[in-house]
Length: 477
Ligand SMILES: Cc1ncc(COP(=O)(O)O)c(C=O)c1O
Image (cartoon, rainbow, N blue to C red; front, side):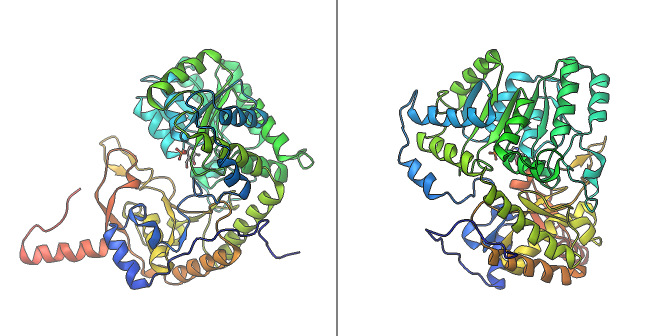
């Protein structure tokens, strides 16, 4: 059968409020053109993230009722631990309220000022947690990563030569750990091959460095390996995941992605001494080590979700639906990161809107336009999210200007995907008339969440008005 069909049926529905273009214009102004500041009820299709947005299954909802809310040693923890052990196979499993808590605790224990952490590509919270400790986060993707149109089966791979050069340049003593993000979210949801994980592991072993996986989308990564890497077609996704983790010394995990849960995460390690330090810190800031800031029922939902995400019928459908979205817009000329990723489609806003200079944020402009057109919320991954700075401290553009359309697990149907295709094509038709933005206020860290924007067209009007009246009426950064 060619038709893409959801391998699940609907038991509970959540109405979507339909909005008009005029209403969306008002909401955009109220949110200062930052889609994170919109009220979710004013979004028709929410593709901001696949994180924590999954629809839970009947099995997960019933598991919630089993939640044991004992403060210490709850049955729910041991059920959760058993499932995590079965798939991930590390000696120590420490629950966390979400991925960034695992990152903060891991780096607080392992890094200090002057440390250097290599990763294929740090996710924004991972980078921020490394930098917050005065350490340096170094991205080492393969060169194809920076070429959106170039197809590569494992575009998430780490540049192993670059890793070796970095280790010899800064010295292994400054590198407390090496990380691999699977799949590589910041660069298109692209997978890392087992061959690459093995090569990175061999380099780490040579220099005595531990290897950690940022495992948020481990099931999607394992399914890509099954589909694309020689020798894995007949292995189950679970077997492949186990092989991935067998090469690592630990992992951070946000269960809000491939845990199919609305909240939760964990930190794993094979190092008992390190685990003790991590648990001590956990007690200080998150909670007792058998709940780690989560309710017992959350641990139950994660335990079921981790098993469900490995169902190959589900992964087959998910990839087919995301590929359908990518192929339908790419066929009409919309530039996307090729090939389509495991959880999202990434539009190359720099290629689509060449008239907008990078420091007028083409990705932000495109994300705003998709909302204006059809109430679709997406996420800029470009200079707004990852600003670079020159030696003088001036802002410089990021290497890529992307708009991510992340597909929440089991939430939208194929007709929603058709709606998204139609909206993107409508915006593409009028792309030449789209203008950029400037930032009028921003926080010091992770600015994309709360920065406020102003359309450049308004700025220019204000500027000319000021010149005309001679009055300073502009907002300042
Ligand atoms: C690759 C990656 N690592 C870490 C995180 C952080 O996880 P959390 O949002 O649960 O803190 C995310 C979240 O999107 C992610 O995509």
